Image (cartoon, rainbow, N blue to C red):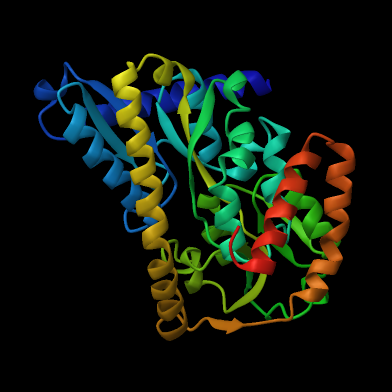
Length: 346
């Protein structure tokens, strides 16, 4: 029954693709001989992720526009992230931005990034993610599933936001139904906070908060403005419990069919996508916070994070024990963190 539902989902999404391909960029006759590159993500057209994709599209078409037609589908137009990852696996679409939590279900190496309080600062987070020695074994681990990660995107620092009361101590989460990303790590994190984890797709969060199905969620500041969550919650608390990247994944066969020259161009395009997204992130967060506070009436709180860290520390020990393959990666991250904390540079 489950497999039948998955097949029906993919068939329905393929139907959407056929319809949308006819609504692409103007003249379908002019693009009929080009190879279409379909890219899906779940953010709005104002989001840094979409801005990065626009930069990628512009560069690829400036270099290979006679062969490729890049088409962007924001705001879950091609379905949920999970469905888009499945479509990328099959090659029905070429690229998608996937949350790390979804990729965790394809290879357990991705669990490392979901560990709460893995990074002490944004600087350490970026230094780790930009280190090929650490991330390449993780990014290439899903090739067996039909795709690999070609770029990482900044998804900011995750914090709790709620309807009725601010989260100042871990006890404030006790009994609250909080939306988390769909991963076992996040469910266990909420259990240690004595909260009730409610995994669901990002597109369903607004309605779930508005209708009282959940008491809040956890995400970065842009969720308040770009996705309207600031209209239905009152408090945003800087618990800073996770810094989890989003990953740009690409179908294996698509990459393998590129010529050597084309692959070099695409690699540069992936870097442009990544850099553009990172460069626009900080300004977008600042603007989102100002709008949420001044126009949407969200109250921002700055709790002591130490009690939260202590609550979830057992998760580190648990996952390293259950998944020994994470230990070398974890050790490399800790070593890099220590170097940066002591000297400021590596």
